Length: 110
Length: 116
Image (cartoon, rainbow over all chains, first blue to last red; front, side, top):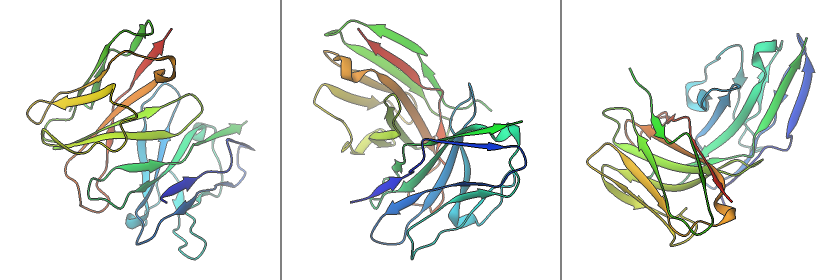
């Protein structure tokens, strides 16, 4: 079964601390993984995708096929990073539909 | 340019009534998706359109749910005889094409449906 698990509902850190939002997936094949973010009173938007190997707003995520993980990391959290973060997997069909984790709320305290 | 828009932004209805939710995708986006987000949960896929055909309806939870798309633009999600468990935020997304690795889905603001 294709599944995405985000084990933490809430992650609370102080400004300047490192952040790691965990994401594990279940998928047979070559996965395509994404992180989406939803800031307060804004719509869901793409943060980064694993195939681009990019860093956005200081965030990076590395696909680890051995551990079936795609954790999101940032070395120094900022207050403006406070938001809801969703890990998503593109399903195996040709439809492009996304399978989402339940989301993690990141709270960065001053 | 304009992003994905959805209407209404909020809908309160009584159990047993029918509701229609509308999505206007980004112009030129051939792929359109509907998702549902219940309170405290992640997004669940409902249905996908390529143009005005729906090759994947696997996420529709029951035959009370249906959707259509006219041309390659507006889509309507209809829920008949609404139940309280239908209460959720319904999100629409569109993308340029399907099958291209990494193709980004752009989301609308959602319609919050409350069934009393």
